Amino acid sequence: MSEPPSGPTARRPIGIVLTWLWLLIGAGLVLRLWQAPTAVGHYDLDVDTYLHLGRRLLHGRLMYEEGFNAKWPIIQVLYAPSAWLGSIRAHRMLTLLLNIGSGLLLALAIRQLARNGLVPLRDGSLVPLGSAALFVTMSQKMLGGLSGHLHQFANAFLLLALALLALQVPRTRRVGLAAAGFCLFLSVAVRPNLLLPLLLVTLALLPWPGPWSRRRRWGGLGWVTAGAGLGTLLMGLPYLWLSDGPARLWAGAVLLPLEWSAQRPGDHQGLGELFRQVAGASVAGVELWMLLVIPLLGVVSLASQARRGRGGSSTRSLMVPLLSLVFLGGLILSFASTHFWRHYVLMAIVPVVLIVATGMAALERSSRRGLRRTSATYALVLSLILVNNVLVAETLALGADARAPDAVEQDRERLIQQLRSQPGEAGTFTSPQDFSLHWQLDQPSSTVGVHPSWSLDPYGMRRSWATDRIGLAISDEQACAQLTDPRHRHLIWTRTERGGRHSEAFLLECLSRDEHTWQEMTQDLGLTSGAIRVFRRDP
Image (cartoon, rainbow, N blue to C red; front, side, top):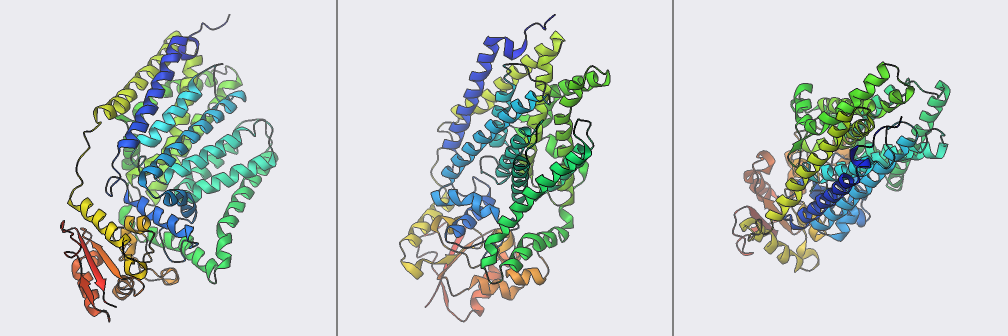
């Protein structure tokens, strides 16, 4: 006797309603992007440093050659298109398109996994499409999403690897496995935090019950590793053309990040606190643990069926959610062993959505009418909440954020116009606290550290072979030398609460000791906010 039709797939009116609701959420995301302020302070300042590095790549300058940030060189490549377009809004639009493309990859991967019995999907189910909609919504609405943070690129490479791996079941192809390994390397190159969860998933997957022999599994892992090795070689290849390129790559990509992490013990947080922050991360007012409650019922249902020995399909379908949980656990462990900022939760989107997809698919196929109705109700209620918190909220906010630029924004715009009007060397400058000026005006920075935290006092790091090789400003003398570098004519100082070498006392001391004379031009340029000071070096 066949199962009674139920759930969004069989109840066509509910399926139509859900599809329209997801389109409305998408419209709300576009509206939010378009009306979001683009001035400095309305997006993560990390993005300014990535765009500046992307700009330098457009001029043929490699990371670690003249600038350092504790990231790998792929960051330059990923942000170069946005830097070329030259605006935060364009960068946000490119990121949204990346999210949509990644969501489509996720939907294709889920369907392919379902064909091989790894996701309990009904024919015509909306779970793949709904998962794609949830992925895009989470990518845009979680902290750091609208800024177009680099985690979104890591998620895109993860999903590309997942789609390639899904195509290798049940018949593997060496090229496909190597391509998946290449994509996994790219995701780790963007966010090294992903290395630990991927290793744990691999260790859990190798002994997983299945038809593959041990030799075949280790052979497949070998091809995945070969693809990752190819990615490593390609990342280092451009540095062979620099006289000390390999040494700079080793110092910048490996040694300095390790030294930085080892010298920051105060940043480490307990596992319990990290779990609380990840579970409590908000997606348009809905916390992650709320998203998972109902889908986990479906996962529990699959586990119950597997425990009762009701066929091997339930056991196979447990692979995706259980490995996703392993991934989440590894991610939290990586945060505990390094450091954590709240936007890092963006890296949890892929495993969370995979758990939701598997759980909802299991509920949709359940033989119990109550669970099928729960699935449909949950999808409908969650979609309505997101429509309200995204589209309705953004519609009501139309014009509400429209305001005249504040004094600091006016000063920045006035300063940009003044610098643009200066020809050649007369318009050169360095700005150690505000790297948005560098990428917007396409000017190099004299400070080696490319971030306010790296420019003058790089986290209080101690001198080492790696800091000397890269040229970080470890001492006061090095910081002063980079501030007063004769290659630039102006020094733009943005007041902060950082203290130390970012204090005005340190600035004035450096200027007084320089062999050249520096004149303050703040009032002459009409800057009145008090937040920005401009000094010009006399020829």
